[in-house]
Image (cartoon, rainbow, N blue to C red; front, side):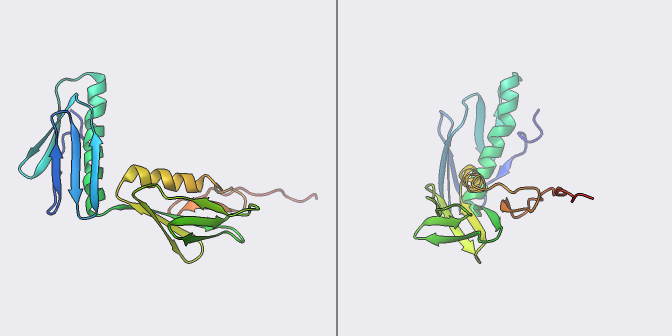
Length: 180
């Protein structure tokens, strides 16, 4: 039995959870609503104000989907109650960001500013000139948008310049040594 999959998920106050017979899960909370279709080989039931995820048999695919389904439902519940956010830091001379309307505009050393449109359900905030906070209720969208922003200038190992996550540690390399 999956160690993660067999854990029940508590439904907090103010959150409504619904599942259709064809395993379409709908979670509504104070921050918004998320809908996701799950695999029909997994059984999802609500018992005593908690969600229980089970599987019919021990086929390899069903064992893999068991923990995944439980984790996705848990992420949906956390998203509509607390939300998710990722913080990115711009490190480098002249690297800065600002929000214009709902767009994120960054100066990253190119000849042009980099403009990023937000995906539906994702918001940008800028703290200071060099910290960008990507927030939203869908964990996957927040992570994808943050990774897309980071891909414009990945951190390099010599000076550490680039866009990095706030908790990311850049392994530094020693540069060239002079001729002796």
